[in-house]
Length: 510
Image 1 (cartoon, one colour):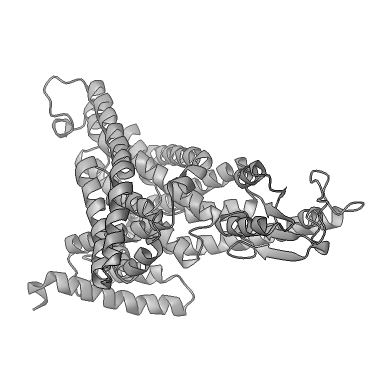
Image 2 (cartoon, rainbow, N blue to C red; image 1 turned 90 degrees about the horizontal axis):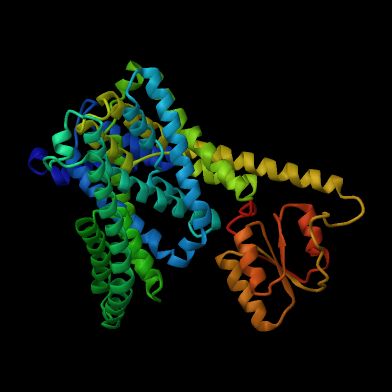
């Protein structure tokens, strides 16, 4: 019977086992994602017993990716994305560059070509969209500054990977790949010319997608959804939201050759400017979570556990690059932009994993003869292990960040002698005022309300971009971390009338 209904068997087998192992993982105080991935290993082709249909599992997982990224887009706007471009663009490029260098080092030790090393390094440099956004949602950090930076970082990485996927066949032809005929089918065409042509076409398609989303999507989609909502039918509204999410993601992939994830994210961003965005997010939540679980199950099905025992050296090197190489670059970039150590650590840790784009990339590289089959196996094993270990990495980064902030605060308080404020901070002259900790989305709402009331207030924030924005509006800002005694002294909290905390947790500023 099961072999006659592979779709039903795959869904039931994957979800039931994911539930059981996810519950066990949660009981052991480990992320349920670990259980979902292990469920995939159990129902995969490399372990005995029931084997789910890999092709069906991957397609079902794509629905989860679309709905997840659509939900992320609903919490974002183009303004939010542009606000983090200064760190997201150089940060993503720096992370990919470091990954390429480390990939080249490993490839030379193994005896691969330089081209294989570059491909290997790129595949280890792109974080999993699903893993990162799911983690941010679980920790309720998606709309925090760190969450916005991480998502912006992901968008840049996705765009770079799209270019890499398009250019790889042409580059394989130039490099004399055995499959050069596949890469460059035009007789007598120039390899360099094909690369430039492919690059130009890809950039044109991405620009066309953004223009189409802005011009058509902004006008038609919110209008149509508003009229459906006025009908009073909840079922029609839910179907309309699913149509927008799935239809626009599929259309973007079919017409503009971008990923489903990027198309769904942009669709969500367009709808985020509508007053119905919150309701749309609620309607897609149950389906999104169910299909997102199947994504992790499909990832687990890819790995052959035997490779960890058969070739431990390259696998360990791959995992170390993913967990520590790229995150180190992310940490240094965040510190360069003057973000506190604790925030930089958490941002770096959240990027310490790889996923769906890497699978597609190495699959194409192997098909074109650019990367040995062993390289694909190392990437798959590294991806699975990085997804398993990433929650622990993030937990460790969080604890280290808290310790660093407390140590910094203690050092500041003991060194403070004559003034309650540090020499670099200008103490406020306000008394009986309100202190707003955090100038993000929640903080801005509080600031607007205090401004309408005409109440005296100031804001504490450690983000240079937030400080500049608020100061341009004429708001008094103390630049620093609220756990720092010097900053609290400069804000004169001892004589403040009210304190508003506009951050997700006590150490969000760090």
